[in-house]
Image (tube, rainbow, N blue to C red; front, side, top):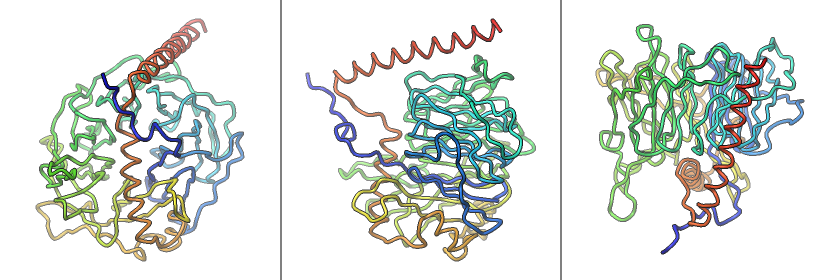
Length: 455
């Protein structure tokens, strides 16, 4: 009997390629890009590059950053990744006020809406919480440790979000599941009450976001997946409200080189402030083998009818731009996008980041064709060349580097989200290791709960 082939990435010692990430301040006061271990921030109000200050015990990140997030009020910023540390930054001074160690590499982060708690997920599927009580201004918080909040044992958590009303923490994993958990009044005691599971995706869940309006303040959840669908959920019951088949309905069917068609994975999505529009990025965007679409999809979300529909396909021409991360702010109508990867071999710049911005997206709909989203030229982007110099590392990027980066992006996203294949012997070893880790985590949760009862 033949063993299952081992994935290529498991047989060599190459440094893992990490996709570039972007985050935008809620009022578009600043924008941040992470590529590899490098965190780059630009002050849009002051039109100047930001110099980060980190005098904590573990200064700056030493390995690839996998998650970045602003707090709801924009006062805090969190970064975390493969170096097993979570860093909390004050956005007033851009000083690191807290560095929290993690037992495993970190895959996702989120903040409570009151800004008092940071949640982060590790590669083993455990969500941890850090109490930021005592933060006031720019002072450093010392000796902060994480407590276990909940767990998807043995499954990597790919996305983490807190609901708009602050009542729930929602976690998605590589095993197609979305879990909705009540966010407890005392998070350090653990979250023990599951509200629902949102089940229906047939591949890894890659991204989560909430859509909400004044009429629906509790919000509805949208999710993207490797099955090439965007789904709308009622998290209180876990009910699937609508499914949008991106490849089929938007015409994005991909050839795998054998004449067969396969569906492009959803790599990221974000929602606009009015709650009626969702921006969607896919891993590879192909209409037919000879015609590539480089850009993003805009989906219309009608919360009154609980339905999703196509609004626009926004193409980015002239360069091989496949977004790895997309974000909007809560107060401006700009859609910020980045493509890029770290640890590229054979180039003078081993890390690449390219930033593009789309304006006018929030006004577009099928019923208003006169409102066409516009991909801004570099000199039209807020901050102009100064911003590009800071966030990209240089104002311009050569085309051959872009083409190499596009291939590296595909590899990075596949390694991040698609389950690796192992030999029978290695699978058995991993099962034993995971069981030991599960027992340790169970004991930690039990001891934490017991100590709280004793105290």
